[in-house]
Picture 1 (tube, one colour):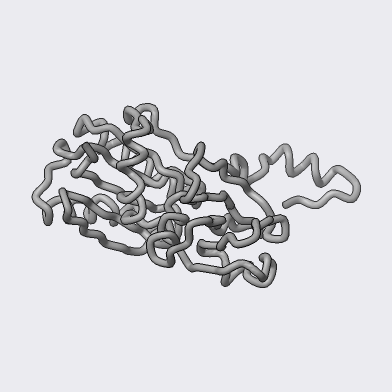
Picture 2: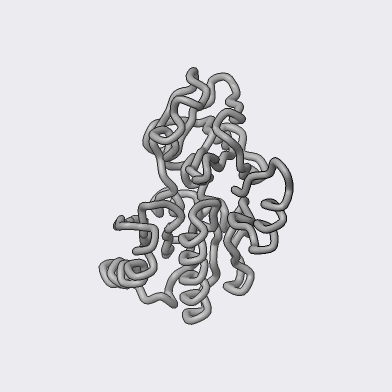
Length: 232
């Protein structure tokens, strides 16, 4: 039987998204993400649970956007999910943010073959392919420059990258503005739970993809000492 009591949230982008499903009822809220998400996420969760009359311990699972995305946002989502999961004794369902982007595009635009994209900053983007007609193993997110993106014929692009990198992306593909919304995660959750993707809170971790965004003092000094090098 599909889970009917679910909480989902994502803080991986500049938009904070929270949603709760209780039976056939789904309610959602959005707010400012980024640095503000840590202060507004828990109050929003409490508000939505109260609106549907659910206690945290009654949830079948807590889904959260595990990444890729903003490092701060991913840490916020994971730490809040772990705290709620430990406190209420509820399993967690980490969901790839790019999968949620693709689902958002499928639901709103009818796109069934999607290259999901999220802005990775530093002149790069995160990308993964999702074929809803032929579901296979989970897609592996990649980090690349916009010019490196390859799009199969007939596939659509979806994500939040078009304002920043639109002129540098393949021009022939259809484009859909999409985000890893909590509503998209709620639609993905039943199949992912049935596939055994839920974990104990201690086993839930963010998916960074870009594991390193800054150089140590020693690395910067070594680069400066190397002729022709430039620190990034």
